[in-house]
Length: 267
Image 1: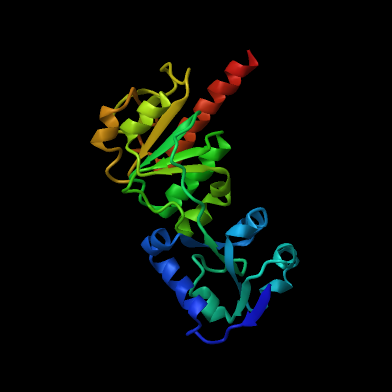
Image 2 (image 1 turned 180 degrees about the vertical axis):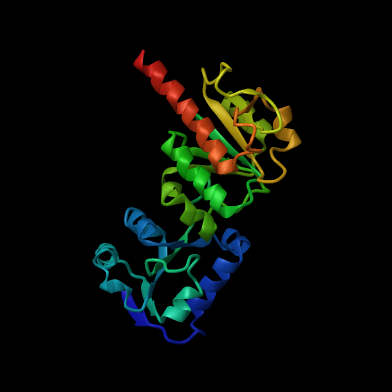
């Protein structure tokens, strides 16, 4: 690892990182992104081949956890740029972070749908929601995530941070329609739709692998998703609450699925 103290805002690596943070489309086009925080840096110790540059805030390596992470990466032939606080803040997606950001290459997306349960993000546009759904999907045992073209870029810095490392354990499928995914997988397609549908808890579903579809925060699921649905389900919430955040709704649906699977395996 080559350590350099970069005091100028004109540093080329720093300028590139600023652009990646500001323009998620640039991340998609260049196949690079920013991973912020100790948790993600710790996960990247298992995938050091992805790391291109490490940025740390000046003095941040007084933290013993951060020093331990850097120690695991010191064999890499990459630059570690130590930045004054103001310059570091310009590439950090959160305030008062841990003081480390890694510029990384994004893994090659999957072309084959494969087997098992799938989550389909149908236009989920908020980076925090997209990352949260990836994380809770993995927690509920679903590691294949398909993404519509209208969704927030899955490897964008804010989505990556919200995923808290779950990205590195998931398979991502881009550029495939829900119809083609359903045909290739043979899975039962379940659409979560607060506008109507049958009771999530009362209905029979999930006997075979599923595709769970979660829609846009404002518009909900697309008409195409409704047309390809085998079952449209809703969460029977209290009438005093209009609807749930999409990540919260996904959590309820996916953990109900996990509950059913665990119960079945125990009998």
